[in-house]
View 1 (cartoon, rainbow, N blue to C red):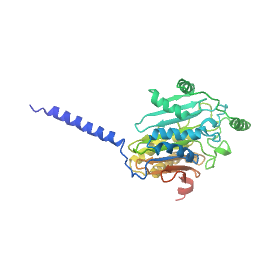
View 2 (tube, rainbow, N blue to C red):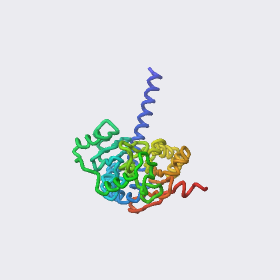
View 3 (cartoon, one colour):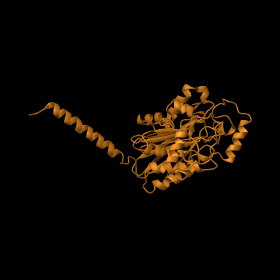
View 4 (cartoon, one colour):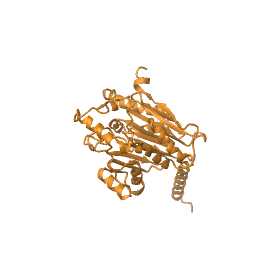
Amino acid sequence: MYDRRKFIKLTAVTASLATLSKYATAKTITSAPGDRLPIVISTWDFGIAANKEAWKTLEKGGRALDAVEAGVKIPEADMKNHTVGRAGYPDRDGRVTLDACIMDEFGNCGSVAAMENIAHPIAVARLVMEKTPHVMLVGDGATQFAVEQGIKKEKLLTPESEKAWKKWLVTAKYSPKMNIENEQHRPGSKYNHDTIGMLAIDAKGNISGACTTSGMAFKLHGRVGDSPIIGAGLFVDNEIGGATSTGVGEEVIRNVGSFLVVELMRQGYSPEDACKEAVHRIIKKKPETAKEIQVGFLAINKKGEYGAYAIQEGFSFAVCDKNKQDLLIPGKSFYKDDKNK
């Protein structure tokens, strides 16, 4: 006997399975021309070397997640880089604390914040993602977990960083203005490189991202910016694209910046226009604050199209694909390109 209720239920289940099958298939189908993928992009000029390392994985058909982890380890290990990794400048107490996060094509993510004595926070962030039921570990807990996973503790405060810290202490005030406590962190300055954010699409069309930093120089101990915060410093949606940020993390967190950029791309914005809108929202909320700080966003969509936008001029990003290995592009900015239009 015909049962209408059973028929409706079976139809709904069939439709759901079809939708699920379509979504799963989308995970491995390239939605961009073959000559554009794979591709990797990252923030700042030190992204060139990072991209080249990531490309070693991508050109062999490897997974984007492996590529971004390998890529950002390059600036993390760079002893001349005082804003990322083991040579980063310390907080006001002379302690080097590192932040990082990573996110894959399935929405899995891991993060560490305010972690000490571990040179590669991005590796620990991935272990958090893959070895624990959590998303974020912080402080001593993050360090303890890293050691339990076989990672060796190291002293991170280098002689050069310690010298810079002691020089800052001579005139230090308890509450310096963000991003301008010294010449090297003035907005628009060539030294304003406080984070590396990296986004990659592999040959299968899958997207992953990574973000790592030593944070704001001479910050209050325990301060954490946007870099390890999923949705702020980094966000990936494999159906749409990915975004990452750089600059004063407090303003990025307040606007959930990278998530916002991806959602704007979902609505049809190009990567550059999505980054631009996110920057404009920061400026609109705090126009006076925005004059004194730098925030920049970098994004890529499922097609492999990319773009960036910042508050101040000086922000740049690196691009690497099979046609070009060391492309550095100056990002557009509000105060240089659009303020008087």
